[in-house]
Length: 384
Image 1: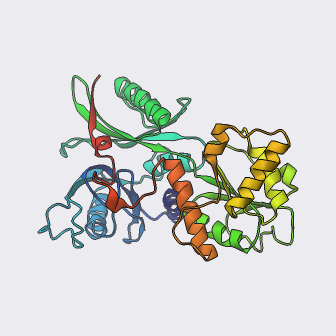
Image 2: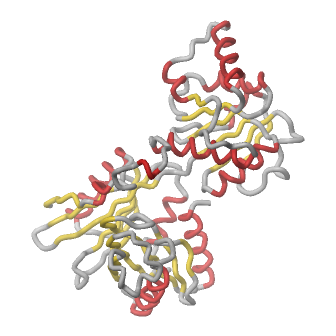
Image 3: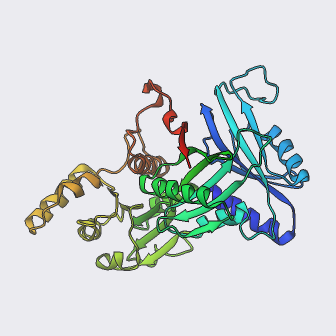
């Protein structure tokens, strides 16, 4: 389950119990930090925390700030400077050398557009969405907070904002969704300046495991930990059943040629062919060829198996396009010396993550530039 799903699940529980809570959101980072903008945690009135805004070094002080803002019932922006190693607030002294802006928003359960309700909208959709969090670096000014949620069709949920501010947020939200990249903007009107963090929220990755063997069981568990949605397909009901695949995993018993009938493929749907049955895997591979949506097809087994597949496809008059060849990963996984099913699962998931994020999967110590793109932290100045 994704962290945001966990936070919203906790929110629903607290709402039913009428326990007051407050949402903390990292709205901007200058320099480096363990968590980036968009990290969130929910704090209830008893001091219980769900989620995280750092690696643990900020949570202690953030808890105190959260309870203070909850008591005052007003949004509050707090600045943490982790570059100051003498700052007693930052107990862990991670040496991140970053300035972190955290916005605290008390939750009003009677407001249908409170921040958690807006985030709840995101968790219930299967499309990319953008959420706008409006704040002010001048802490004496009003902090509007989580204000707007929109999809690519401009379907909007949120607060009532002045026309020019809302229109600017809608325009930037569409850009964020189209470019699949969050942004920061400084919006200036004749009267005031607003700073806004517009975050892209993609639906969870969907991983389809073709094959329900013991190794698929382990890979499904690992995938679930990432918050991805898992579907297992196999022709054997003795293997493909909910007793073997617990949790949120969807299990489908099907013939190979009917594998895709009950699966909605989008650009975040990945496949791993691991049935340990050559003909079964080949039949499903034929179905996937030419599909423009799926970004990743992994095939478990040695290179000779994949070469045999290509030869049989060619003999059958099926030409595999360059686009399909680029998205097929066979043998599946990264070379990390994996031997056990869990290690192999790790190598597969790491490769899928690198493909989806378009990263080279090389050691971070080989990077000469910052881990994260610091250009994305810069405010785009817009005059309304």
